[in-house]
Length: 354
Ligand SMILES: [Zn+2]
Image 1 (tube, helix red, strand yellow):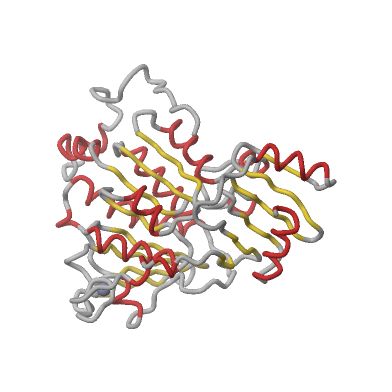
Image 2 (spheres, rainbow, N blue to C red):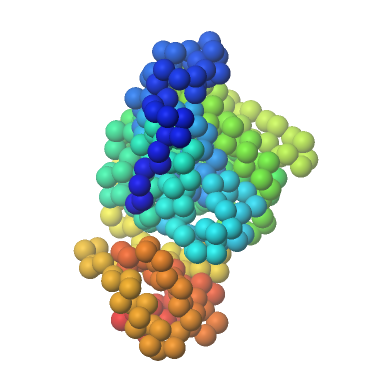
């Protein structure tokens, strides 16, 4: 997806003072910086938390960063999703593509990979296996529980983060050490469990990113002793901040990290083919496994012949159908905007896309 950015400083950052302020920080030092250079961070989601975490880690000099997202940039994202600009919204560029381009410009030394995909167990297996840290930057609990199952099964540390309104929350989960997300679900209030559209303010995003980013840096430079093992939550508007000790909340019967794990969210039947997107008047339809890729140029031509208002780029075709708008990706996946009704979305899909 695009050419890697060139380093405008005239060569590799190795030996330059690019990371000098980070190396002067004693708990990282030149040795920590070298370790960071050899590490792979996986960021699930390229919204507000994803763009913030990715920028922080790429500027810090992580060796490799993978960022995955299923959506494209919209105007309502620009208030807080820091890697995007107006042209990205105008062009409806997929977030993963826009993020990759911007991140590569910020640091040409990092191996950045942006992947446009809806993530299920198979995608996680392919993209995140062997990563050194997994960052939760999703907006829904289905995705978080999937990430939790995957991380615990692969024994990879992951950093939960969520924000809604002026409220944010975060926790670092170390498989085999701390309780996992499933352990906590029934006992502590976790933010982000709602799909209500109550909005969100950017400072909350930045604060969650600060906690997640610090946790990721500690893990990647090998200073896990310094990790904050408490469940942090705060409200920046009502000026509240709490840190809950969750160390004794690990449940022996937990389906993910307990004595007899079943990893329920990694089971194939959990992979729904349709989903009403969180907090949005949108239904996502996924093609059956093994479906052929769409020829987007041909699709755009056919829709224009039908008189549809079509906008296309190399990643997607967007068109209006009455009061609805459909967006089709190359893998055949479609977003149907203007409805929460799966049957209605399916019928529109078949009418225009066969
Ligand atoms: Zn658990």
